[in-house]
Image (tube, rainbow, N blue to C red; front, side, top):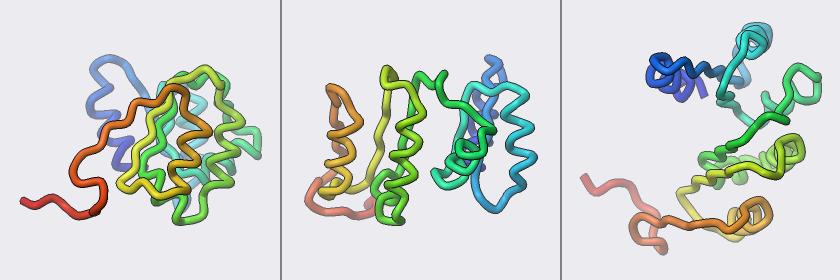
Length: 134
């Protein structure tokens, strides 16, 4: 999350886009302070984001784009309940980007539930997961 925030700030600074990362292991106080200063983008791990939602520290009713990156890994790590809690807090009318390296049944099921008229882009051999050849 921190790396994504750093890159977002680097590219968004010139157009006034501000972001905050929210992840475990870092002081909550600093993350909430930055959020309350006004941000356009929250880059968060599901567990920490739910901590802030449950504590009433943040709101997601103004979200118009939701990105779930590494969805397969989040599901493998047991974050489906946290993802579903987050989905309850964001508007249903939104753009959702759903990135995954693999396409197992659990990922397909979640995608079918949260995506409307999805457009699927697949790169490489879908039957075999492997790193770049270079």
